[in-house]
Length: 377
Image (cartoon, rainbow, N blue to C red; front, side, top):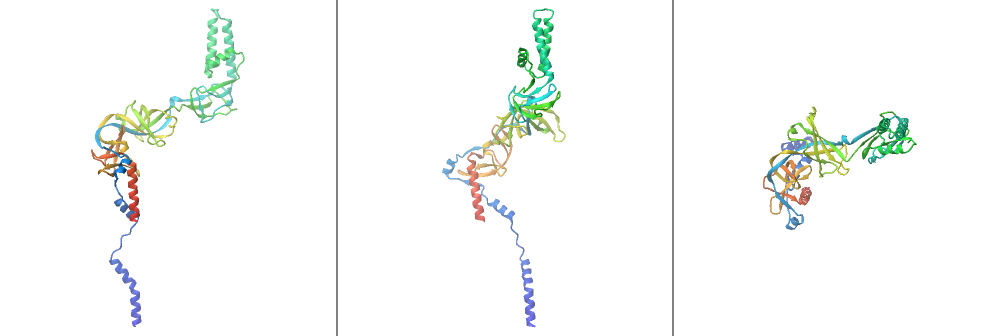
């Protein structure tokens, strides 16, 4: 009987311990979220430097101030070819391509030979030109015939020009009785070959597409201007473009057109900016962010652009809170104009922000954060 009683007590002991644990409460589980919260709470927000470090870092400050800020309108867009500097070369007469000298992507100079076309019509027009020149020579000084002969020669030359033959080539044709077998196809502008649609041996009908070329020195930026900003945007305004390819670099241009149609889906209007290629760095197809100058202005709290830093995707400034102490402060920024940034939240007028030496302060903050992590671990 005693053995049975002892056995029952031993069997019930784990259940009793479990009940006692439940009465004492379940401890809260700790996880990554709590660790992150603890880290955020303990991560340093201020840095105190020695006098030597302040001097070595060349730390300079400037007070946040309220002043008139010229309004700027932001718009997104993309670079495209200037349609006024694009040419499409087609066959001006039927024939056969004997030589094709360029391919897509080639850079060409104005007047460069692109292809040569064998054309019976070209041979016929050359013969007419020779006959007209000989007729004028025969009737020179004859009042009854010279005018007609001169008109006949002018017509023959005009028909050659319609094929793309230059005046210099026409003069050379007149000087030689032997016709040229091949018609030269030349580019009227310097630029880039966008399309080369033929190869040697291809037959060409009248109007067959041969080449498409564009001048990369002059480009357009097609912007999408929000409907709400139309009242502040005028053609002729200065524009500054920024690209992901060249961060921090300004590409100036001028707004030459504000469209007449609001797109129903996006509620935007096209804005066209004429811009140079930036020594070949801007390329059609690039996405751009544009800042358009507006005639208006308003009072705003501003700091120099150099004071605003990016830290983990957030705009921050360092505020002098002691003789050698600087505090990291998240801010919300607004418009930018003339090297100044509008501060919407996070700063008060008169607070001194660091305009030079922020890199050292960010490094010191990271160092302190790492030390706290190791100490916490």
